[in-house]
Length: 420
Image 1: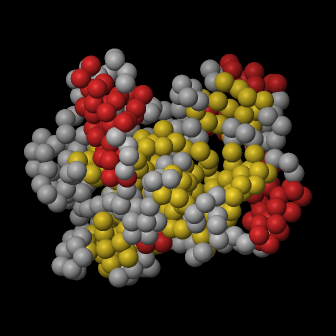
Image 2 (image 1 turned 135 degrees about the vertical axis):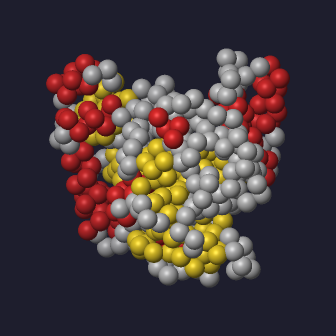
Image 3 (image 1 turned 45 degrees about the vertical axis):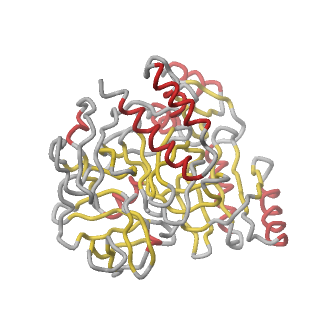
C-alpha cells in the first residue's frame, strides 16, 4: 500500500528473513530459554530498559545476575502459569473474556467486558478460585471486538481494514493484515468507489490466529514498500522484525485514530471475541478504535504486530491486542520487505512523497523507544523552542483530534532530533 517515493528515496528495499532482527533486550528471553519454564516465569523490560527475569530459586537468580540482568524471585513458575491458562481454555467458552500472563505480578489476569453476564462471570470466577490465588479477575468497560475497518485504508464489501506490513514469498508481494478483516477471496480497493483495486485476500486465519495476506493485483508492492504510514503524508521505514517484550515501548498506526504510543503489558494473551477465540496475542495499553484493524505495531522501525482488537477507545483509553508478526511470517511462509538500512546505517531525512504515499523517516535501529513526552522535554534532545512546543502540546489534549495530532507531531519531532 505504500508506493511511489519520489524524492530523497532510501536505498531499494531488501527482503528480511523471519526473525531477521532480535529485540534489543533479548537477553531476558535468552535466559528464560536456557533456565527453563520450571525455574522462570517470564521476562520484561524495566523503565530504564534493563532486562528483568522472574525466577523461582536462588541458583537461577544468581545465573541471571551473572548474565547482567536483574532477577525477581516469584512463587509460581511459567509451568504453573501455563497450566492455569490451559484450565481456563478447557472451561466453557465465555464471549467477551480474555486472559493473559502478567509476568511482573506473577499472575494470570482474566478480564470480562460489559457483555459478560453476572452468572457467566460467577462461573468463571469459580474456575479461577479452583486454580489458585495467582489468578486475578478484573471487569473492564467496553467490549472486546475486532477493530474491523486501518495505517492506510483498504476497503471491500467485508468492511474497511488497514494495510499492515508489506511481505513477499519471492514471487509475489502481499500486504500482511488482520485475518478477521475478510474471508479468502475478498477483493480490496484503495477507494470507496471500487475503482482502484489493491488485491485479493488469501491464506487467512481467524479465529485461532488473526492474520491474512492480500495479494497485490499487479504482483508487486512497488517503491516505498518498506514504509508504513504514520499520517499527514509521512511514514517510517521498517528495518526488521522481532518478538515483542513485556515493558517495551511501542507505536501503532491506524487510519481512524492515527499514530499512538503505549507499552506491551502481557504476552500469550487469549481473547474470546464474539466471532471466536484467538490465542497467542500481544496485549498492550495503547488505544485503538474500529477502523484500525490490521494496522502496524512497531518500535524503532522493527515490525512487531498487526492490530487485532480490544476494548475502549482513544478518549477513555483501553486495551488492544496484536497478532505477532513473527508467527504470521512463519505460518504464511513469507518474508518481510525491509529497508537496506537495517544493516546499521544511520537515520535518513524524511522523503518527499506523492499524494498516494507517505514520506519516510528512518528510526534508529535498536534504540529503545521511551515516552515521547519524556524525549520531547529532554534538553539533550531538543532546544528551548521545542520545549515550549512540547509543553503546549501536552496542554492541548482537550479533544481527540488534538490528541491524535499531538502524537503524530511528537513522533516527527522526536525522530527529527535524531537526524543530526
